[in-house]
Structures are given as C-alpha cells and as structure tokens.
Amino acid sequence: MRIETGTGISRFMSTPTVSRLTSDEVILMRNELFNKEKERQLSLYPRIEKIEVKYTGKSHPGTVFVMNKALSTPYNCAMHLSEWHCKKSVLALVDGEVWDMYKPLTKSCEIQFLTFKDEDPEEVNKAYWRSCAMIMACVLKRAFKDEYSVNLIKSPEVPVISGAFCYDVILDNRLNDWTPTNDNFRSLTRDATKLIHKDLPFETLHVEAKVAHEMFQHNRYKMEMIERKASQNAEGIVTLHRFGDFVDVSEGPHIPRTSFCFQYEITAAHNLQTKQSELIRRFQGVSLPVHLKAYHIVWDKLLERSKRLVSFSGEVQLTKYKDML
Image (tube, rainbow, N blue to C red):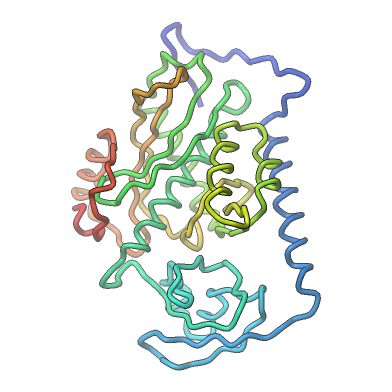
C-alpha cells in the first residue's frame, strides 16, 4: 500500500534489529505454536469416545446424533440435518451456551442453530461484527509489510446499531501525520475481499496463559490483554481464534467462515484522544452478510454512516441489521 505523508510518498525501510522478527516470521511462529497446542490437546483423547447430541430446533426436533467427543463440531451435526443448516447456521447453542460452528463438542449435550434471520439475532450480529473486525485487523497488520510497525491493540465490542465495526491500532510513529486517503481505504478493502473469497474457516483454541504469552510476546498490548483474560477464570485460560494463518486473542464466538461476509468495506480511521503517549487509531468498516444483501442506495447510506467515529457507553442495545437501514 502506498503511504503518503506530509513529505510525500515514503518508501523507506526501517532497519530491524537482530532480535526482531519479520512479520512473516511472527506469523509462522504463532501458527507453529497454535498447531502444536492443538495437536497436544487432541492427544489427550487417545481413543475415540462417543457422545450423544440431541437437536432441539424447530425442524427434526428430538433427533439424536452420535458424534465423536472432542472431534465433532456443531457443523458436523448440521451436516446430518440438511444443506440449509450447513449454509445458514452462523452459531450454535450448546446447552444454552453460544458456540462456534467449528468448535469441537466435549460432552453429550443439546444443540440448536442460530441464523441471521432469527427473531432475536443479537448473538449472531455480535459474532458477525467481531469477525469483520478480525478480518480488518489481519489486513491492517499486513498492509504495511515490514516498512512500518503495526501494533494491534483490540477490537472494541460495539453494537451493530453503531454503524461500524472497529479495531484499535498503533502505527509506527513516523505515520503520526499520515491521513489515509480514499485510495488507501480501497486498497485495504481489496485485501479484505481477497480473504473473504478464500472462504477461510474460523478456528477456536483455548490455551493456558503461558502459551498465549509465547505466541504474542512481540506485542505488549496483547500481552496485557492475555493477563486480563487469564485473571478472569480460575484456570487461567485464554481463548484464541484463527482464520487462515492469522491468530488473535478473541473470546468469540465467530462466524463459521470468511465467505459469510458479502458487502464489506474499510471506510475510516480516527485518532483517539487517550492518556497514552502513543497515537491510537480506530479503523472502522461496515459489512453485510451474504444472507442480507442491500440495494446500492441503502449500502451507500451505510457507508457514509460507518465513517463517523464510533464511541460507546455500553448503553446502546444490539438490534437487527434492518434497524441500521
């Protein structure tokens, strides 16, 4: 991505220290650790155990699936119902708990599926916004390659009615005077669209804090987040999610695959007023899922709205996508 600063187009390279890993090396390291921990957890179940999963949805109520403990997922259960359930299900409810579609089931349970067109789509909407923000984080991390540092901080949990999903980042201080142009946003959006078209699944992994620390040792903001997350449960467990080779600290749940996104644009970047010495930028975007497409006039209105700075007090309640229009 071409970056224009006040002194023109900057293409100079920062000189890495010996101990500093390149972005590609960090990605490789995180994925190796993710895969290693995933394999370790699977090894805890040396023999396949069966569990019974009772479907409590409207169609085929009472159907019981015999599944494999710690291997089978809600998506595998949906496959036993119909193609419709596979394509439309965004999340599962497992014994009343919201669950990722590709997160393994660990015990006998009751299950039902959630879609965008349910009467109460709150959890689905939250998962969609969360996943859109994670896609944007991946794009931002890679857009600057190794020319400028990009520290991902967090994705604020903002309601759909706010008009935009967000991710807060700290860019290289040499970019403090940089204002992204429309061309920059179009470039970022193209990168996001490529990820969406790859139809990448979102994976879930619960890890001990020490494992998460090792993965994110090069990002002090994530290290602080890991400490907070681990302190919130007695086991000190932190939840990670991955799509493709991008790993982030995220409680989830997330949508099943990137292809659930349809209309998607990264539209704005705002400088936040904080007590920190570093400049925090809130990048924002807007999206609609493949199941809820909008006409051009409506989409244009959503784009304009998404450019306004999103701030939140926790008082605004989530609503349906149609209430954004």
